Image 1 (cartoon, rainbow, N blue to C red):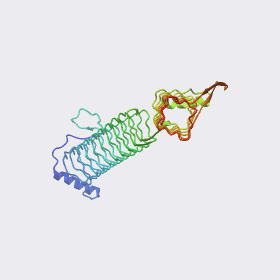
Image 2: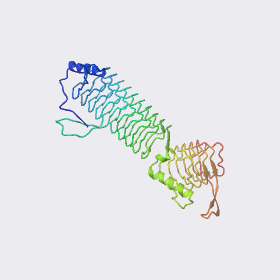
Image 3: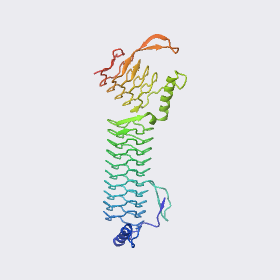
Length: 405
């Protein structure tokens, strides 16, 4: 928390501000007559301060709205609670600047450098203030295209409706931020933390989201099409109303919600112990889109009506697995073992089965003796249009009612 004294002064003159800035530049240059400038609580609205050297200047609660700061150097400047609404900060250097509780509504910050800037909530307390509640940094409807915000502290910031096209937000902290309607297309958010952020109508088209965390974020009509999402953490995120077309997305098993990880792990224990440990896995109507469960043994697991769109299931063992009416659109089942697997009514459009093995299997009792019954892989009423079945033998499957090219 920062403090300021009195109200914003309306008596700042061009001369005294210019004199303070001249002495500040002298201070930066270590001139004996130089002095670090403190223009806190001053009215500097509408000023042209473009291209000036204002590194480490103190501008706490200063009114700078509609000012020209194009190319201005504000490295390590203290702008706690400052009013920067409508400012032109294009190509300005705000690296490591303190912007806690600042308002930048409608500001232009194209190609600005905001590396390590601090946008966390803050409040300026004046002697006349009754309310002392901290406020979030206000970045609504800002233009931050191609700006550098690497490692910026933006937890709880309001970026609603802002444009960050092509911006660098690598390692940025955006936990709990309001990102509704924000445009991050072509931006780099590698390793950024967007957990619990609001993402309604936001655009991450073609963005680099590798290693970013969206844990428990609220997504609705969010566009992730074409995004790079390797190792992206999406635990607790409902992707049901999001666009994921052509997204390079695979969710590792360790990043699944806890209850899904538990079911998969306990099922494999059940398989390995021949039913003595763990328990048979049952997942009905679950969302497992783009999950990477390659090589896992899901034999006899029940996955009816489960969405496995785009999932990586290469090398999975699916002996007698129940995938009735499951959505496996564009899933990769290369090399999977599909012995007696149940896929009636499943969506297998554009599914990859390269090297997969479909085969009937003898049904045996728990003591290992044969029952005399044979279970064929069941593809009845399944939609196989566009599926990659080159070199795969499905003649021994139940194909009644199946749709094929």
